[in-house]
Structure formats: structure tokens, C-alpha cells
Amino acid sequence: MRESLRFLLGDRLVEIDRCDPTLTVLDWLRLNQRMTGTKEGCAEGDCGACTVVVGRLDRGLLRYEAINACIRFLPTLDGCQLLTVEHLKGADGALHPVQQAMVECHGSQCGFCTPGFVMSLLALRLNEAEPSVGRIEDALAGNLCRCTGYEPIIAAGRHMDEIAPREADRFMLEREAIASRLMTLNDNETLALQGDGGSFHAPATIEALAELVAAHPQATLVAGATDVGLWVTKAMKRLDPVISLGRIEALRAITDEGDHLRFGAMAGHIDVRTALAALSPQLDELMRRFGGEQVRNAGTIGGNIANGSPIGDLPPALIALDATLVLARRSEAGIERRAIPLESFFIEYRTQDRRPGEFVEAVLVPKLAEGVLFHASKVSKRFDEDISAVCGAFKLTLSSDGRISEARLAFGGMAGIPKRATAAEVALVGQRWNEAVVAAAIATLPQDFSPLDDMRASAHYRLTIAGNLLRRFLIETTQAAMQTRVAGLLAEAAHG
Image (cartoon, rainbow, N blue to C red; front, side, top):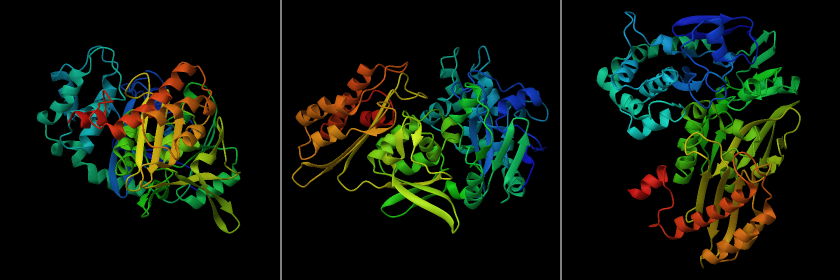
């Protein structure tokens, strides 16, 4: 085991021998390093004022990601590079092209949110050449501003490459050298840190993870911490010990297995979206609204499932697709694996079918067969970067005579777990796909669900919306000319 945390802060090597497991990157920057350019706005990964850029190795290449420093635990930066707004100025004090673009396009007023916007634009610049306006908007969706109306900031994103070419950016020129330095920091040892608040463990292999989970059954397993971080910043929980899965490259793999895709539990949402988009544009649209870019950079498919939230966006879609969950744990013979239907993993609110010592290793997602109808919808109070009030995903298989031979209707936000609408499915099977059968299925939804009233929606609203999403599915699959969406990728495609 290695007992010191190692990462690059800009181009400076940082080594830390003691660290609390849930010390946030934001608190370390502001309180320990006195680097106050990174701001705290919401402390829950929502406003983007705390955005920093993390460089990490991805299959040997350096990958830059904008993340929320307020909910990212510092020890998870092991083997990475951390960039803040303080690192952007040149050796002579000159502004970086992203900063200069913000000045010239009048993209800052009160200035509080500006460092976060700058860092989001920096990550976009380092990853993509000549991004479209749509991509700029996506990259900035996780940053909130009360003053500018966003148009000047979007203009800055379009203007930054005109000020200085991307290829000449010093971060691009230093990319290979930084990657080489990070390679020397990454090893197969388990990181084991102690701090006043407890212990932090980060194994580098699945075998080491299984050993740790068996030895510490009470540990909190952390993937991207996009929800667990709030347990600390909002609920003030003390988590001890913490086991991070972030150093296990084997868990990040996405592979095509012929009739299905296999996602390692640590596959990030950015890569998950790309893979799922090949199955259906509906999934592409759903994932495009999965938090802001900072959340998608940090979050993982396994974390979204294992967290067990009834309003997670991915489980309804994966349940509709009949996904399988692979759980693993240590045994005397080595690693013991168990495969179960994803829908059976969720038992009741925050309770899953996970045996002692088990962890999520992979998700198997079947490909859609020719002629199968599939649909996914998310309804939330705001279009971007919001939690679902209701999420619905539906798959229908039609027989040669046009009748429904199989129906899988899954909802999130309608119960304490993501759940299928079994009575509605029964109402559909054997029938023709039309308005009358959809109306009959909608009438059965109260048999399947008794939603709660909460801050996101009333029970009546949720039941109404759930039925309307089925109607949208019918319209989109039988009346292609009718426009059912006012914004998003599918709406853009419909408008041509």
C-alpha cells in the first residue's frame, strides 16, 4: 500500500501524507492553499462557481474534465492534474485566451461566477476544436449566472480561438509532458490515507477492491461522488472509511459483446452517452440532460445505479432495455460474480439486493432489435441540469400482425424505486398500438403507482405526466410529422 496522496497542482507536484477522506477540493484550495479564485456558490454541484479542470490519464492519453470542486473529495485526485483559474495567466501576467475572450465579449458582470465559466470553457477548448454553439451551450449548462443572460459568455466561447489558436495554447503544448509525469504517479498500489476524520482507500485493481470491501463492509463506496458529496456538504455526514473506485481502469471499460454492450461500473456518463446514443437517439437526448457537464464528467453508470435513488435518470431506461447487473465480491476461490436483472436490484427506497461484500462491477445492456419501438422522456422544472420529476422509458415489440407482443414500461420518480408499470404493460400486450390502447394503459397507472407530493411535483401531476409520456411515445412512433418537443436534440432533429 502507498500512504501518500500524489497529484499535480498546475505543474507543481503535491504530496500529502494525511488527509480526511471527505475533504473537498474546494475547501483544500481555499483554506489550505489560499487559492480563492474558485468560488463556493451552492456546495452541491449545481451552480458551477467552483468549477476546476482535472487532467487524468485515459488509456494512456491525457483527458481534461471540468468538475465541481465543492463535492469532489481531494484524495480522488491521486495521479491527476488539477487546474484552477489561477493557473491560466501567462508568465508575464497576460490573460489566457479564454479570459481575454470573456473581457472582449463582456461576459462578466458581478464576476462571482466568472472563474467557473472560464474553467468550463478551458476544458471545452482543450478537448474539442471549433466547438459548435450547441456544444458551447452544453459545456456551460452546469454553470449558472444571474447577470449576463449567457449570450456574451457563449460569444466568448466562439471567440476564444480567434484570439489565439487552440494548437498554440500552452496547456496543449505541455500535454505530452504532463501525461508523462502522470504516468509516473499512477501505479497498481492501493492508496491508503489516514486523517483526523477517518481513512480513505483507493485500490487500483478489482481484486484489491474486493479485498477492501470484504474487510470494511461498513465502508462508503464512492464512484463520482456527485450525490455522496452532498451527504457531506449538506447533511454534514462523516464517512469513515471511504473506498474510492476511481483508480480502477478495468472498471471504466465499455465493450461491444455482440448482442449487448458491457459497461464497467466506473464508465463515465460522457462515454456512456456516446455508447448508448448508438443504440437510440432517445438515449442520447436523455443523457444530454443528465446534470451539467461537470456532473457528467464525474458521474458513472455504476454509481447512478448503486446509489439507488428513485429519481436517477438511467435506471428507468436500462430497466426498459432489460439490462443485467453484474455484482462481484471476494470468495475463497477468487472473485465471485452474480448476474441479476437490473429491475430486481431495487427492493425499496435506498435498499438494494446487494449481499455482504458485493459491489457493482458491470452493467449489460441489450441492443435494440430491428423494428422494436423505444422511447425515453425526462420531465423537470428546468430543461438543463435538473433532477427529474418523472422519467419514463418504454420498449414495445410488435408481432408481424402489428400487435404488441412485449411491453416494458419503466418510470422513475413515481415510487420509492425505479419501477415497471406492470398493470399498464398487461393492458398493452396483445393489442394494437393506437390511441385506444394507450388510453386503457394510462387508466391502469394508479394501480402501479401511488406517487408522493414533494417539492418537484404533486402526486396528481406525476400521474398525469406519466400518462402523457405514453401518449408522446405513441405520437412520436405513429405521427412522425407532429412535433412533440420544444427543445433538445430530438426537437432540433424534428425541425431539421
